[in-house]
Length: 165
Image 1 (cartoon, rainbow, N blue to C red):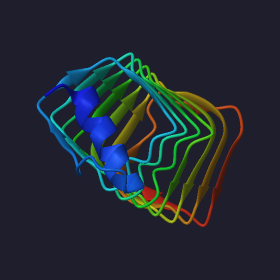
Image 2 (cartoon, rainbow, N blue to C red):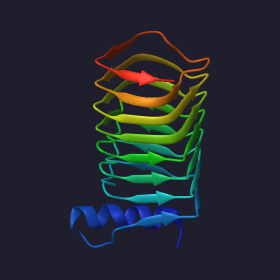
Image 3 (tube, rainbow, N blue to C red):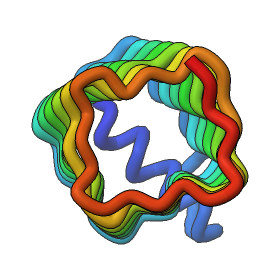
Image 4 (cartoon, one colour):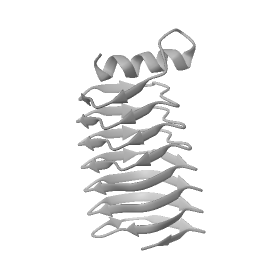
């Protein structure tokens, strides 16, 4: 079954309108999605190329060993999401929030962050390489093994954070 159908079925399940809780694994996708509730979804070993995610709820999502290549995330909520062993290359994140999210063993390479909030989350072995951003806000973010090599933020606020290399 294609990833798009599994993702849409998961959104229907979250609305109580049928569908089923989805686990997307070992697939590839290049679709765009708008206004879906993908809370609790599990995505593993999946590649998204040029996909668009607009106004998507990823609350409590489990994303692992996946690749996002040239994807756009606009107005997405990653509350309490877990992202591990994943790669984000040349992706853009606009007005996204990551409250109480857990990121581990993942790389963000040449990504752009605009008006993004990381709050009360935890990072472990996270690399932001050659990324750019403006209005990046981090509050009470903790982490170990965090690298910002070649990354520059025009305006960034780190309040009460404890991020160590």
